Image (cartoon, rainbow, N blue to C red; front, side, top):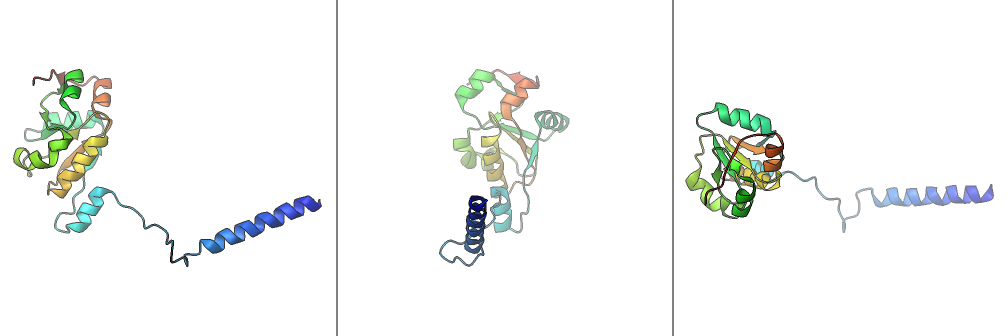
Length: 160
């Protein structure tokens, strides 16, 4: 019984010390500020452009892109990836490494832009770049070409 009280007392002391250390008064190690997505940061830095991108499923992206005459579709993977899987029908090919340099010259700002990659990570980076560049209708394709293929959506062979 005595051991149990000793353990409970020790635990209580540790908890109290932990709470005291977390009271926000530690000026040498302040708590980290909440983080925002890059798109939110871009919007905050440019109040004239409060846009952010929208993440869509592959099926929704395909349906919306197919229904729009002026939509633009961009695949930001690398040429060897395009060759391995093919590319979504109608997609423009701009590797992520060249994206910020080429996008302003090759993509219209007044038309919707759908961005795809292999799994959704690089397309998110490209979507954030488009927002920073002043595009307002930007769509990140969730799951990338892997989800696209799994859904049985059309691809075209890559022609270098």
